[in-house]
View 1 (cartoon, rainbow over the protein chains, first blue to last red):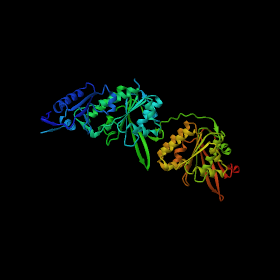
View 2: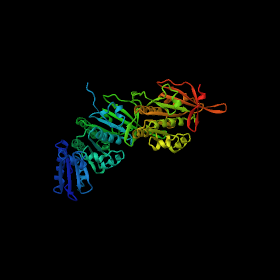
View 3: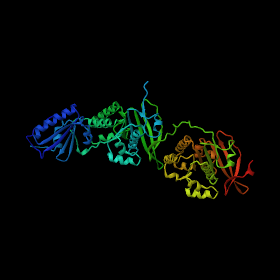
Length: 103
Length: 471
């Protein structure tokens, strides 16, 4: 997929993200890779990411209403969003996270 | 050959139809349109599993919150809070906020797997309910992926060895909207809710039950105060005990017309006659004889209120009031059309459990015909009589016949007469400018009986044979 190659980004505030994965599954690994790539490229240090393996914290899965895996939860800024899947649709991910890319 | 193990369903009557219950450790699909009782069915399976069979259960709800579920089933006596506290029940509400969800690539349902696995293992669950898993589909784009995940989930549940009840909303051209029936190959049950002639009836049908024989009929089921019960129409067997004890009909004159000096205990008696032929009086004598034996008696009155019945019977010397006071007699009056047939039967069943009567009178059973078609009434009467026989209860039914209409050609009589052990026909005729009442025993199983027509009078002391007229 063609990645956006814009120079500047406007990140309104620091993003607080939690990525829920299920062990070392292929989809989980893909999600981590995609997220890392995007964060490095667009967010620099303006984000806070926690990765939780629901296999190790099964109780959390229920408490946090996790259904789909992998799931990326954007806690802040509001509105909350849950991005499900491998995060391979970069455009959609950035849009959902509220990251606008200026020309 | 490996036999299929069964798990009791906890739903009254269903084990009978399914020859022992659901297939153990396999998924069962319950489908039906909205409001047909799917969630209740599932909840009862779970709760009864815990309380009656000591099998802990997990309720995964995709629609209602744990709080709502708890409240909804409180009225049926399902105490979710208590079962949860005892670590016998786990409720997990799967809440998905559609507006917050974005699909950004391939995903799986590991969240559900992990939550279920955790819930099952934490209480050692043997039963699982998924209500209604199809809700997952709404708002999602990748249907193919969800479908394959759900298929994987069912397989996983099977491997886990839990008996799972999955509910599904009826689709337009298929049993469920998402075609779940394709994945649940072991047992599929369809619930149906219909309104026929203004009377609501619920029906249940087993669509598929792999590796097991099962009843193929549509069975009526009820949602009562204690949950769902299915009423098998024809699966009851003719295997009740037949006592040889003889009881009185309440009238020595009538008793003498039988070679045994009375009728058998736990037999059923039918009294037919036109309007005003003293059917209720005969029934009342029968009720009093039961009270005199100190046996609880239940009198179903479909035409008169208890007060009216008490007043009227007092005029001919039948003291119902005393019998009611001593708690031997219970008069249950209701309009036949107030409830559907099934509900009448349920009220009766409930009273049978509560009062444990030894004698039951239904006056008149012909009123019930006004609220259902002949087949339905017949089916209900068969079930009713079987229930009474099973419980060894003396039963007496009156049935109204109309002038000009032969008692041999009346639909209710038709339905009841072949089931009744004793059949007494009452007549009113004009003879010499006088109305003459007479009684004829049409049949009485297992005993000799008088073949004559016996005249009688209704006096201040009730029913009296005019012996002079005895031929």
